Image (cartoon, rainbow, N blue to C red):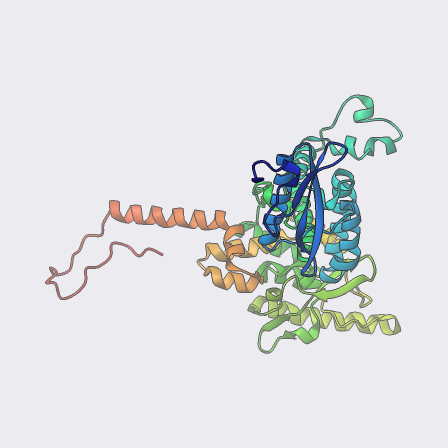
Length: 435
């Protein structure tokens, strides 16, 4: 009688669904079995090993993943091929045009040269980590061959590397693009999991900005008084609107009688359409805000100025409906506004800041005046209050320190009570009000 122990290893009977394992003529071991495939179907696969244990372990791993509901990867192409498909057929319909342009540049400069030749189905977390470490430590001037385009060698070709490395913010952005592409591959059941999620890049430090102080803000407003775009700069500093939101304002969006403005669009330059009106950055950015009295007065003056320019231009006037335009009525470029802004800073003898720092200045000054964080969040159009709290954490810390110092001063020098003795009918008076 033959027992299972007496049966040759290549002919042992396995349970139903466990697959088969046998030795080939070339002395290798082959294991075959059915696993889950895309489309909720079953597919027979084959794996190989130098011995029976190795082949069986590979098959068991794939069957276990199939039992957890993970389909067999179907991606046979390279990472570069999938990135091309994702950018041209998927992301182009889901992203804003400028965002899609940045994603395409990231894929061309960093993803394809570093990971493009690897098979999508065989990409591992180790591959991603090695590639990120190389990006983090390699001079981009040398890697991308920027020095070869110069008439005179200045960097690697001259033996003096400039060590032009990627910043932590750029590295995190490149990593996020890869994660987005692989996440879509998982949704399409091309790969079982997103290996980029297992390689953290760390939280980069937020960009430091130096908003205008109250004195500097008053100096800036004095410098822009009389400028053709005085109303725009005043509106930016009082409300914290983004550059594109200011340039995208139409007269129909303003209710000067009611003192409100509706933010519905942003004006940006795109590669395909030139200067184009686009939807706001997020759904929360489409909002209605209150306008201060100073801005209402300057907007009335700006409308009268624009009327005079329209009469002076006569037939040369190009009606666009925008609040802030060029003297001929056409929309203003963002770069043109930045040049005007830098000129005004120089005229006022103020330090060089970005135009976007006017938005930070408005929020910082509001926080220092004790305005609630949720009000500032609605004014700026942030999607979540956590964004507002994170960006302006340094301001809140300073306000906390002021409040703690005020409390400490009250505890060190309590106010003497000169009224009649407390009989217990009324609560005791506080030493000092603390906000």
